[in-house]
Image 1 (tube, rainbow, N blue to C red):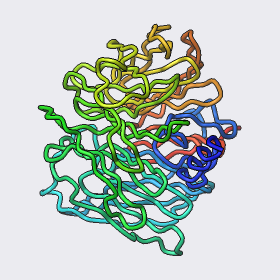
Image 2: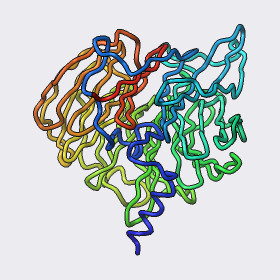
Image 3: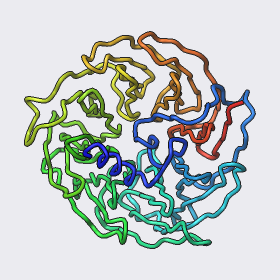
Length: 414
């Protein structure tokens, strides 16, 4: 009965998404794994895409896909204003189904962002009837997808107002709550909104005075026989929180660590996360416990080739990372032993994608690399898009989608 209840809870929180949908940042399970139909193993300029469409404005959010429709966000400069938009496309044809403006801001009054960032970097969350889009300090919005003309049914703004470098972390969905981090100069907290109306369900302060308190990580939900936990790294502190109540379960602190971006992954009774700037450290931390577990739960750490930006990929007993400078490392996930550490082309912000024994990488200039998963480094091929690409590649229904700075490409398996 306990296993059945866990399954039903996971099924409910995913809002009936299937393995071939891609409803949130890093896919159905939030770990970069695709389990659907055959994917293409070649893409780029030498391959003919199924379709390619122009995307207005600028946004580094990854697309999300549900029931044959693609959703993404962008920010379009219109004179002195910045128009935040949500766009829906038909996945089969690439045709724009609708383009909805959700809010506008005066450009001159917006905080400056990092030159690699955009005003639309967080990836949305989609269910059968709702699209949740998030723009960090510029607000969170719920769009009703059941109507012929989709409309914003609630918005939540003013949760914090002093980000550094702009927005970044994506929201996640758990049951009836939308959960995300608010890590700016004026507030450092993890927040859950009620999906019904956008009201605050709970808010948990980081409770740590970091000299550089800004961070951008996406939380991660883990559920087992002991219950559900939301993991959220921030500047100087990693928190485990009960997603139903908002009660902090345990925390781990570390020397500074700020501007944290990678989403944690879970496996082998551990949660893996990074501390980002200035010198990133990869931590493998034992699950469980209460209070401050800094001295007791750290199983292993790594310091070489650890990414500031790209999330980690866990496949079986191997943990993979790709550093900002292009060092691809394979660890034994249980012990931290390095199987190999090799250079791949370019610099990286996008997170890796895994399907059927293969790892898909995309660097910041659009060069794609296909690797074979395993304890030995095996490069299968390399492909050129020759367009700026910071959004993570996604997969659905046997197709690979790559968002560049101006376009969205679909490549279907042959």
